[in-house]
Each structure stands twice: as C-alpha cells, then as structure tokens.
Length: 387
Ligand code: BGC
Image 1: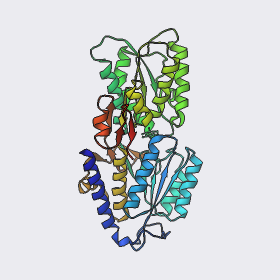
Image 2: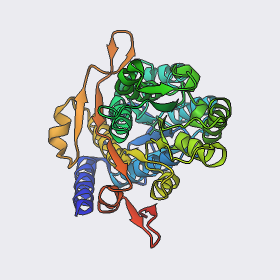
Image 3: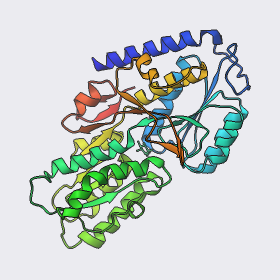
Image 4: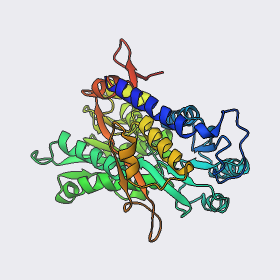
C-alpha cells in the first residue's frame, strides 16, 4: 500500500513538473548552452555527476535521478567518475561546456572540486550538492539524509542490543569508519561515537585495539577490501588469543561487507558479533538474512531523488526556495529544511533538505523494504531491488 502512495506521489510530482515545464516545449531539445536556464523556450539541461558505479547505492541514485529529471521533461547528462577525483572534475567541466542549466553533484572528494565549482559559479549554473556536501560557496543547496542521525542509529542499535544500560559487561567493540574525503563520513562516525563514548568512558565497552580516532579507523574510498584487510589485521593482532569481539561498528554496508568477511574467515570466537551498516545493499541484506550482519540504516534514495527533482524544478523556474518547498510538494515522507547544520566555508551556511534514515533488521525488513515496494523477496527469503 505504501508503494502505491509513493507511486502516486511520484506521478503527481511528474505531472506537476511536466506542467511546470510545459513552456519548455518538446524533449527533442538542443540544449541552449546559455547556462542560466532562464530561456523558457528551450528544454533545460541537467548535469548529474555521480561518484562511481562500484558502490551499489550510486547506481540506484543515478538511475532514479536520471529517470525522474527525464520524465519531468528535462534533458540530462549523467556521469559516474569511477571514484577518480580528476575524472569527476573533467566530467563536470564537460557538462559546463555542454551548457547545463543545473548541476547535481555527489562529490567523490568534498574539497577537490573547488576550481570546477568556481567555473560553474562563474557560468551562473546553480549547484545542488547531492548527498555529500561540497566545500565551495557556489553550492546553492544541499540534499541529503540526516547524516549525524545515521550514526546515532548505529550506535543506539549497539547500546540496545548489548543492553548496555543494564548488562554488567564489559563488552568488546571495534570501529570501522568511512572515507575521509567524504564529508559525510565524519558525521556518521561522530553520531555513533556520541552514543557509544559514555560507555567506552565508563569501561562497559572496550575498544580492544585501542583504535578510536577517525583517522585510524577510516576506510579510503569506502572500499570493501580495505575494510577487510584492516579487520583481518585487527583480529590477528588483538583477538587471536580467543578474546571475544561483541560488536563492530561499521559506518556503511560496503565496509560492513569487508568486516563480515573477516569475521567469517579470521575470527576464532564462536559468537557472531553485532555488525552495523548503512544503505541496504543487496549483498548486505543477504548477510542480514543469514545472520552475518545485524542491521543497516536504510536511506530511501528514491525519495532523495524526488526532493532533488522538486528543488531543481523550483531553482530552474526561478522561484525563491526555502522550507515552503516541503509544504508545497506534499511528499509522503519526512524531510526538514535546515539552514544551520552544514556550511560550505566558515560562516557560510548551506541551506539543506534533510531526509530521515531508518533502521532495518532481519525482523522488520519485509515491512520496511518489501511492503514499501523497494525490494522483492525470493523463495529463500533474500531481497532484490524491485525492477
Ligand atoms: C553515503 C552513504 C554511502 C557512502 C559510500 C556516503 O556519502 O551517504 O550512503 O554508504 O557514501 O558510498
């Protein structure tokens, strides 16, 4: 039933956007190249710059964004930059040269796009930072999930599952964080640590490796085999004597995959540690069904794309954008307008639209992911993204 609501919202959003774009004529569009998107007689062009296809979620983001902007009557250019910052710079430069009217960018490295963002700014092209903030004041808006809350949900899951408020403990934990170049990674880790730290300080939780600094536990490019390698080293160095690991905080699913693999191959204990994650990637949902991962923080990226489309339309139509976009859009999911939490430089806050993440476990995955229409379930109980 939820699926129908979402589908209705989508088609309503699309109908509205088509109406909004009706002055824009057909989609055969030879893009104007004017850059400002103010020429209502021509189909407007949207550049969608995604980081990579090697991490599952960006394929979903890319196709949702592409489909939705196209259905709304826009021309799109979509690129995936193979996690290579230089390539993302040149992909965006090409979009600017192609005369896009709006840029939607999920940055590989939040600090490395400075020059090209300045070039976009000089060309008068509005920029939406998608999911990951870019540290440049030409960014007009930020659309993401509440990144800090993602981390608190992971930390709270560990607190609740180990019953840290009542159990005597102590329990052993290890930590794996994300890519330092990704502005989100620090928020995820901080959110989780703010929940876990009181228990670490009281001694109820023990980080046996002693590795608690973000830099020590970060995972370059969110890479699964990098997370696997570090987990193997930690297990060999601190747990080979039979010490039990009770929980392993992982900031997302690609890193959780590596840690779960290390637990399977290199851990000598008999318990299955709690392993957290984020995204609801297919392989991780399988691990959750199989008991190798405990939870994932799910972020409905289809909704993130809906917000980006409605925001993009408003910008391209020259409307003043603020929190009223949320009331006017009437989405069937929660989103807040936040002008304080994120800044692109000291003292320069970036108005943000933040969606709400949700905890998915083996017990609620059918309700949260299948009944809502995002995934289908096969006869073995495994979930697959709905076509
Ligand atoms: C996203 C996460 C994702 C990670 C790796 C982050 O910026 O917010 O959802 O797991 O990148 O792709």
